[in-house]
Image (cartoon, rainbow over all chains, first blue to last red; front, side):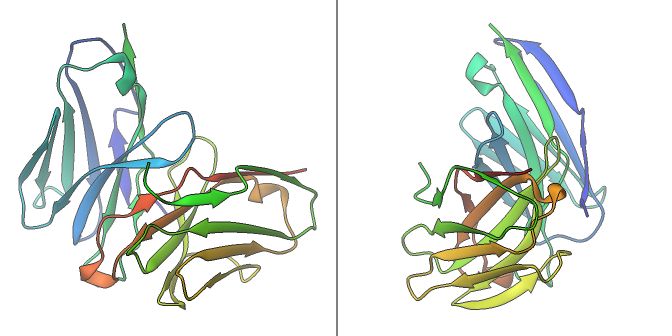
Length: 112
Length: 115
């Protein structure tokens, strides 16, 4: 079963604009990870944020985590056509063995 | 490149047949997890192997089975294939388990089509 939902399901923007994707989850987490997937191939790990962290940056990526609202957001600044992909959030729970529970994903299209 | 390789990349099988998918983990990693991703969906956890033992299993029937070898590479076996088994199968490599589990690195996947 899916842990939560991503919002929006699809996002279309122009190159240079910022893209924001949101993820909600249902149960307590150990960490939350964001992945990118191009054209139905393998998942590329983008960033991991632990449950005791509130914000993390990596290059043009900014991730926030609000455990009280059970939600996270991924911001991609100054988007490029190459950022066109599906983006997934995935959580691990505090009691388990590290399995990832994924959301349904957001399809991002960046127009040149 | 993540250092996680899967083979084959594509496979077509007939309903009722058996299939074996392979995954070599990233150097230094001792945990391999398998996921099934249906078209338009997020990946679903099948099972995890840690130091050659099954360490956890998702909601998949027993005809989905696996192995992990001493070099930490892994196989996913599916018996009695059904049409609904058509999906992208992803292997993920990481270090440790539980709260100590690190971020997972995925292979490019095997696209299985059952006809």
